[in-house]
Length: 380
Ligand SMILES: *Cc1c(COP(=O)(O)O)cnc(C)c1O
Image (cartoon, rainbow, N blue to C red; front, side):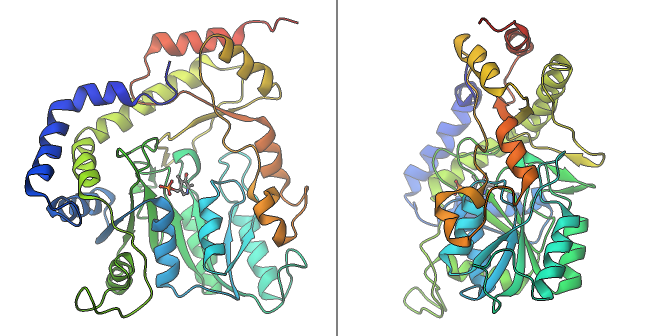
């Protein structure tokens, strides 16, 4: 059994995929070829925003908006410790400082009430640790849509507006998700997504995109994406990056986008079957009213995580732990001076969580087998 089955998907789209790839090989515009503009237009329409800027990966999709906002040393960005390291890494890469805020125990996303409290305290001069100097200025918030479920952006945007901060939506896992009738990728001033192969919409390599309705930010990010390009290739008006998406990856994404809605629908069914079959065995995910998860991961909680993972392993069923260690306890972030106990919810979830195989092609038979294996008594 595959954790994420990309082979079945490939078999279903192979002829269309080959046609699209052949077209790129024939025209030979491997960098910024016509498929890039075509994809950006379709993605912007899908998400319901004015601008889509495709780019090299989800990490650069987070980096470019921070660069466009001029973030650097002395700036503080609030985010969750329960995420993939890239969310905080981009803040640090620019010399700015991540300030972590604990998560909600049900959604595993940043807790807006704690965010409000943390920013309020910060504005009054309180600092989370002694390593966060008094001179730091609060600038923005990165909300993360963990496992495909959007964070509570009405609340996050409200707190941000009150304190004059910008908001970036890290929609790396939530492309295809929804919040109160709006698509993930449209829920904050700027959103970033990833097309890493295992994400809900994945290409065959690295890829990402940024979304915004703001014309000026979009123009700056388009420039940053190509070495801070100005009016022509050798006019550089700002410091940028080599952040382009390959034309071949755009061709692959255009093909996969055709079946994406169906896959998202199928993922809802897979998740519903899991939640039914796993009742009483593990704590299954709860999706609040008005939300739709893109189900990047189907993650459950158990006090006996290690035993359950072992049972599945013996039956040849793969699992994964996202994430075993919250960012405030990572070696790379020792420098921020956090300690165990600072974010009790994130720490507890990290000890109990694990993820089961999840993709739109997972059938009922396999899911029944997974629940069956989990229900077996552990051998001493
Ligand atoms: C995958 C991921 C990223 C980074 O995306 P890449 O394409 O791997 O660079 C950023 N944030 C989150 C939450 C992710 O899951």
